[in-house]
Image 1 (cartoon, rainbow, N blue to C red):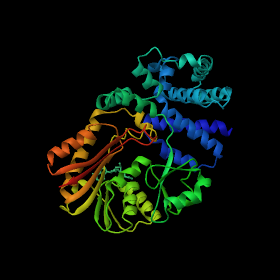
Image 2: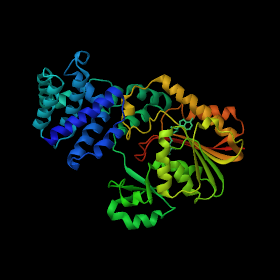
Image 3: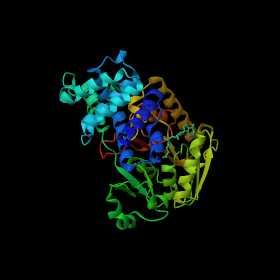
Image 4: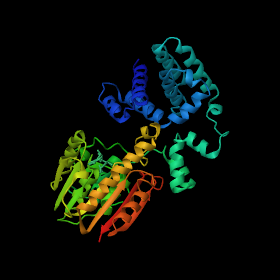
Length: 422
Ligand SMILES: C[S@@+](CC[C@H](N)C(=O)[O-])C[C@H]1O[C@@H](n2cnc3c(N)ncnc32)[C@H](O)[C@@H]1O
C-alpha cells in the first residue's frame, strides 16, 4: 500500500513542477517531514529528481508511443515518471511499476488505464529501440540523451564553441558531489578531516577549507553546531578569490542564503565590518540563521535593493555575486532545464547585473577590489558583461578571470572575475 502512496505522492509533486513551475526541492522538503519510511521517501526523491532531470529524453520516448497533442498532460507526466522507473530504477520489479501506474491512470480517468498499460508494456518489450536516437545528428542526439535543451546548447556553442557545449550537456546529468566548507571560526580543516574522516567518508580537495563527503552531512551534529556549511567547491572559490584583508570595510551586494557572506566573515576572522544586502525579504531569515549557526559577528545585514547603496568610495572590497540565469547549476536544480529559456528574461537579468556593477563601482575605494561572479555559463552575463564594464570605467583593471564550466572537477559552473579600481 505504502509503495502505491509513494508513487502517487511523486506524481502530485511532478504535476506541480511541470504545470505550475514549482521548485521540487521545496516540495521534497515537505516529503522529508512525512511519517513514512526512509525507503519510500528515497523512492519519491528518486522518481521526482530523475523524472525532472531526464524529462526531455522521457518526452522524446513518449512521442514514439502517443500523440502528445491529443494526450492529457497529467497522463504524459505519469508516462514520463513510469518510463523513468523502467529505464533507470532497475531494482524495482517491472510489474509493480506497471500496476501502480495503471492505478494512478485510472484515478485521472478510467479510460486512461488501457493506454498506460499498453504504453508501458511496449517500453518493457522494446526498451532499446525506443531509447535509440542514432537517427538524429550528433548535436540533437547529445541533447536528447542528456535531456539538455537545444536552445541552451546553441547559446553555449555560440559563446564558447561546440566542444565545450557537448561537455556541458553530458556533464549536466552527473550526480553532484556533497561538498562543504570547514568553518575556521570554530575549527580547522585538517583537524576536522582527521576527526571525521571515517564517520563521513571524507575526501580532501585542492580548494582551501573545502572537503567532500560520501555521506549525507546536512543534518549532522557538525553542521548543526556550525563547524561546517554545505557549499559547492566553485562557490567556495569566489570568496577565496576576493580574499578580503582583516579590519577592512567589505560589501556583499547580493547575499542570500549567505554562503559566500559567511565565508568572507570567516576569512576576515570576524574583524572589520561587512555590510550585506539582500532584496528578498523572505530570504533574510535564512541568512540570519546561517550567520548565527556559523558564529559570524562582523556582519550588518540589510534587506534592500543593492542598486540604491550610496556610500561613495567607502568599501575596500566588494563581492557582487549577481542574480543570473543559473545555467551552471543544472546538476543541482534540473528544473532550470525544463523551464523554457526565454531571451527576454535573460535580457532583464543582464540589465540588473549592469546596474549592480555601476553601483559597485560608485561605492568602491580607489585601490579597492571587487569580485563579480555568477553561477552561469553565458557570455552576455559573464565575459561580455565585464568587457562592457571595463570599457565604461577606464580605471578598472582585471586582476584575474576564470570561467568554470562544471565538468572540470564535477562542480557547479561559475564565472569569477576579480578587478581593481586604480
Ligand atoms: C546568486 S544569489 C546570491 C548567493 C549568495 N551570494 C551566496 O553565496 O549564498 C543572488 C541573490 O541576489 C538577490 N538580489 C537580486 N537582485 C538584488 C538587488 N537588486 N539587491 C540585492 N539583492 C538582490 C537575489 O534575491 C538572490 O538571493
